Amino acid sequence: MAWGEYPVGYNAKVHGPFDPARFYGKADTALANVKLGELGAWLGRRNLTLGGIAGGFSRGFWRWQHKYLQPKKVGIAPVVQLTVGAMILFYTLNYGKMKHHRNVKYHW
Image (tube, rainbow, N blue to C red; front, side, top):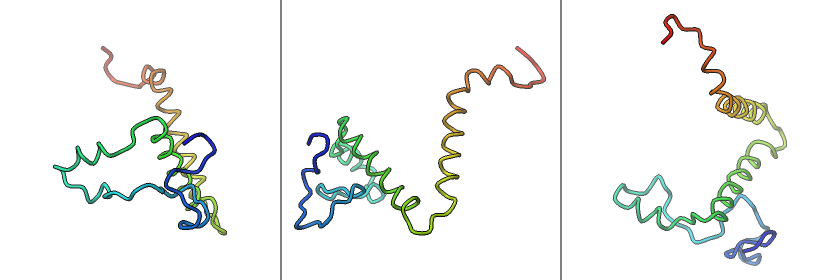
């Protein structure tokens, strides 16, 4: 599959209009239904290439967008989620600089 093409498992006659939030490959056991002994085999069936990981992030983004950004009546949830996500991201990026400015009683 190259950039801009449909996934290999997609068939317009069977699936209807293309939905970027849907996985068109062969269905597998959900992670919640995998037993601990089968976890290694289940992980071995995942597509851990760069394209597979990017496709998973893309599907996750589209699912989030369909649920929170594209309904007719959008609430405040996507704004709060993006704000909290940005706060966590920038806190982790600046943690090395901020940890030296702690107010502690004893200094080492």
